[in-house]
Length: 294
Image 1 (cartoon, rainbow, N blue to C red):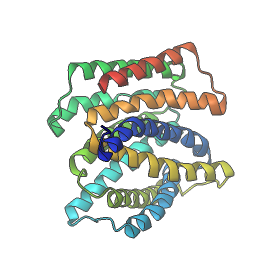
Image 2: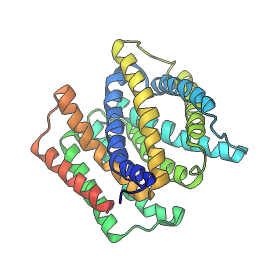
Image 3: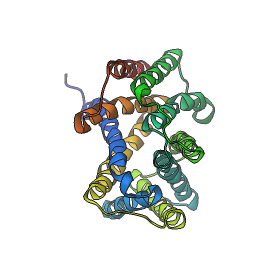
C-alpha cells in the first residue's frame, strides 16, 4: 500500500532539504569572496538585506502571514535576526576583511556544532547520544583536513580575530535562540522581521564605521543579488524549516559539510586547488554528519 501524501512529503523533505541547504549555504562563501573586495562589510550587508527585505515583506503580506501578536514575539524575531544575520555574517565578513584567512574562519565556525551539542541539553532539553558526539567529532576532524592547506594566518589583525570569534558566537547563539523562542512564529513574518531589523542595523553600522563604501561593479552587483535572493531567502528559509523539524545538534552538524562543498565549488568555478588531504577530509566530514544524524 502506498504511503499517505503527508508521509511522502516528509520523506522528500528529509532527503532533499538538507542537501539543498548545504549547497545554497556554501555558495554564500563564494558570493562573499566575489563581492567583498568591492564593498566594506556592513555596507555590503546593508544592501543585501535591503533587497531581501524588499522582497520578503510584500510576499508575507500577500500570503497573509500571521504577524506577531505581542511585542515579545516580535522582539524574539528581531534578536534572532541580529544574531544570525548581523553578528554571524558580519563577523565572517569582518574577519576576512581584516586579514583572517577563509580557512581559519571556516575552522573557527566549524566549532559551532560541537558547542551547540554541549548546550542543547541545558537550553532546549535535547539529548545528544554518544554516537552523535562521535559523529560531531569526526565531522570537525573532516573540516580540519579540508581547510588545513588554507590555515595560514596571513595579514590577520586582532580586530580580524575578534570578528571571527563574534561570528562563532553569533551563529551558535542565533541557532539556539531561533529554536528556543521563534519555533512557533509564522516563518514568513519572522524572516521578514529578521531581515528588516538586520538591514536597519547594518545601514547604521555602515554609515557610522565605513562611510558606506561600495564600488558598484558587475561582480558586486551579481554577488549581492545572489546572496540576497538565493542565500538569504533560500538557505535561511531551509535552515528555519530544518530547525523546526529536527533536533538542533543534528541540524547544525550539516554546517560541517559547507567547507567541503565550498572547496569543491571553488575548484569547479575558480580553479582552486583541491588536494588529496582535502578530498579525504570531505569523506571524513560526510561520514561524521551521517553518524550524527543516524
